[in-house]
Structure formats: C-alpha cells, structure tokens
Image 1: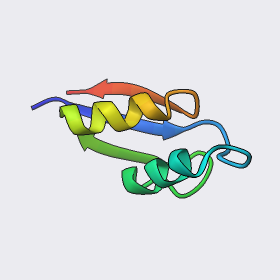
Image 2: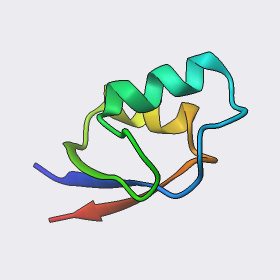
Image 3: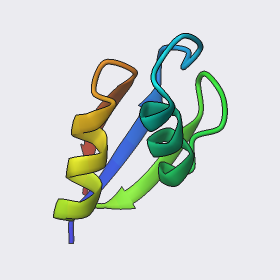
Length: 60
C-alpha cells in the first residue's frame, strides 16, 4: 500500500485550535517534523484540513 510523507512547513501559531489538534493527531509536533502514514481516506482528510501548513509526498 502506498504511503504519504507529511512534513510540517509552517508554524501553527495563530491558527485555529482545530488545526492545531489535527497536526497533533497526525503526529506533527514542531516545524520541520516529518511523519509517514498509510495513504488512507482518514489521513487524506486530516491533511486536507491543514493543507496550508504541510506538504505531502507519496512514498512507494
């Protein structure tokens, strides 16, 4: 199954609490943090919520 590499590229300071909680749920704690998750609809939805704070790459 494909995987997603999610990198936090912008700070969450000044963003909504919902966005902060989503980043924490993804496992991102600080700027420059990287996590690898399975490519599933649940994670795609979370990434869509904070798409202005992260970048996503598909990993084989």
